[in-house]
Image (tube, rainbow, N blue to C red; front, top):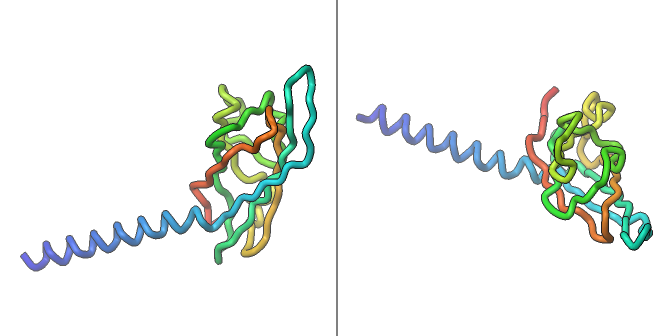
Length: 138
């Protein structure tokens, strides 16, 4: 009976540790956006956004999935630069997933360093992105 209790406690500690690590892991990268320019073409407004991806954690990050959550209204694949598509031929550009470009993945993004990517959005508002599936080892 004592062995079952020890195993149960060990399992609960392991699950709690995994959950805490998973929550903190996504906080290792911070995204900040700045509007570069806006223009109107045939009564439709477009804007260029530059996004800084900053490693605020203590480990190198070799890759991560960056997913648009809302207001991501690109018209073509070339409207995003300095990110790689997870699926090279996405069926739905508004819900495409991205990951680090290969030149970042090779050496990793170390503590307090950043890289930028950009996109052209339909409208004058920025998209909202989430970050998950960080790769911390090469």
